Image 1 (cartoon, one colour):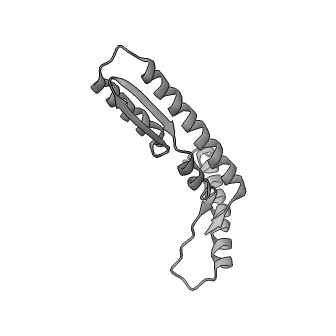
Image 2 (spheres, rainbow, N blue to C red):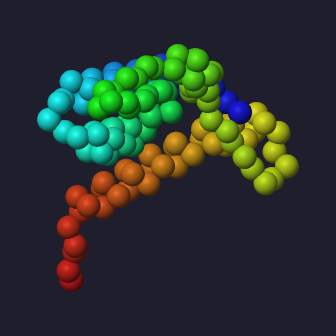
Length: 127
């Protein structure tokens, strides 16, 4: 298992943004009095599925009123895995060589991307 500090920051920022958007959308549903209970529950399901952060929310719906709260313990537990990724290999490499090999794939991917870009700029030659 490896940890990338840059990706860790990016994961945290992304999660915070998605939780804030979900909270905002749930607040809109809570204040909307035009829909019945079944419609509101369906809307809540769509909201929680849209940003995929429903696991961080605890909510209940009673008497046509929505109440929800953010589960900070689950967010804290999830933060432990921010920036982490696992490299698995079936060869007899030690962990340093496996990580180095994985990171070197970026050079290969960049080379293929350059070839594709260059080949798209070259027009067919007819002779």
